[in-house]
Length: 224
Length: 314
Image 1: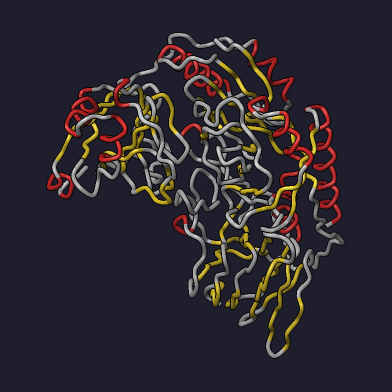
Image 2: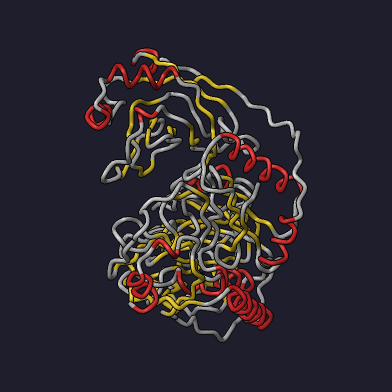
């Protein structure tokens, strides 16, 4: 449930679901997100769910903080909404040229490359949110022994398709972008497609994701 | 005349098609985009007889130099911009906030913005553009919007598919004032910063860095010390949010910003000051002044009323 609603500037509500991050809390956030989206409340122009927060921005010409807060305070959540968790298997090539930070991780995590990959490929991930750049999924949770900090200096350009790790999360760079996550491989699969306006994101909050290791040859010959 | 178009002789530094942007896509990672300085965008459209959500060309610093081919058309430029119009052998100094007629083979050279960043070129017609999520707005980082998500390039052709035969001459007496005091509401992580850091934020001046673009404005100044954590759990952002990463220098989120971020938020620029904020050039100084939510709402009402008044004067 929402623990507190405050204002983020003069044109957004900051809904705080508490300090913890887990699937249950995130599922609540997503339920609120879907309910509010469905209600089409006049004035709202964006709703951003994240691990444990929901930010609702609005057009100050149409509504203000106090009026919208009252509506959100009294909103009835659609409980058994048809949130269908889709499952995806994402092919990843971890060979040289794709696994840009594997050596750094070996050092930071004091683990051998093969152990890192073994632990990573065994895991089923949960998509907490998408964003930062269009379609980028934030996937959790990595096992404790795979948790590393961001690069000290972020890369100016992370290649499209890169799989990055940081703290308890993995992500996929949907297009070339600056970024500071530890890159362990690259997928030939297109995760974001702006030509599909109704469904540009392959992976959405609540979906389940596993990764499958492929060779460079498979990568180069990959067809969706 | 079979086709009306601009031939781009020089594209300028960052010339893109913009309108009011796109809503309700933050959750998939797509920001509003849209014209950075909304007031000047709206005025440009009104000066050429368009409605309020009509694509224009936004330019930064140096604008495009174009040659026009086709039936006569009205144009208007807003902002604080130096430009020339060449018709035949006549070279005319252009004036902002005034419509001009372009005829076949005329040239329009948008030389530069003066002590400001963005300017707008509107036409009494409709560019032939591809829309994505009901907006033409180009987001060059995500490659979304018209012109294949790219800024304009030299030698390209911009087709005008329709001209509204509205050649009324329009003019507005308006000077685009500059402000250096930017009003902010405290952010959700204001208490992450030391007493000294908070004081620096509201008392000191900051300099706008060269590393500023449509995504964000980076500032340089005395380091704002964080005493809690230089990272927060990634969460949603909105435009105007001022984040302070570990190096202690603030970054303000602008129209093409990343939708999620993990740096503490020290403040948020009030909606009333956004159009003025984006016009601050690298090297300008900026000073933050704290206001509460109620004042921010009133400031916006006033600002919006002023914009509506300007529009109704045209």
